[in-house]
Length: 166
Image (cartoon, rainbow, N blue to C red; front, side, top):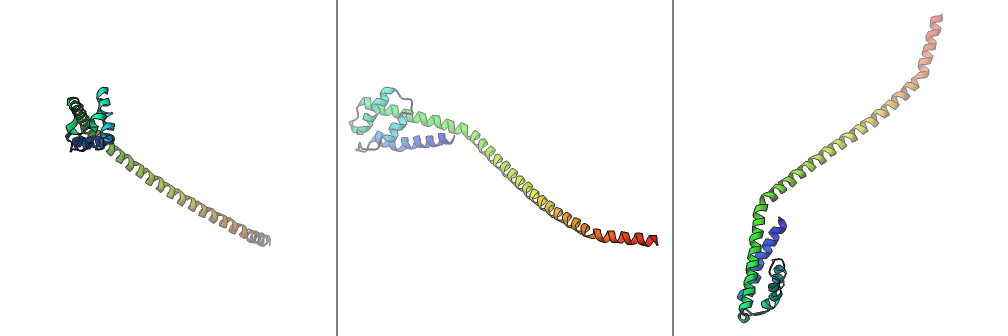
């Protein structure tokens, strides 16, 4: 669609400016014809017209004969037909292009939401890992504290046994 829009603008510009200057002439035969020649190759013109076109465009408007005038008229018709075809493509393609643009925007929003969700999950995982490490350190501290109380508990148990025996 975008290529059709760009090509339509290019052909319209060539038709309105470059072609008009060469067709109507201003007494100069030195205008740049490269744009028109490159566009004419895309116009499905008769091979003999394409062959004659460079020499016709090189002539001043006042020096062209009837065959030259016919070649210029065929070029103009080809350019106008190309513009009409491209206009149709642009007009019929606009709704589809808008739908594709909307789909792209929706997909981008979905991607952004998924990235946000993934980031939130990663943050939660990091918090859970930190909490697990903290709990493991606390568990180890409790085990050390219990281990340190072992001899005191054993001594108290022995003292109890002695007292009970008496």
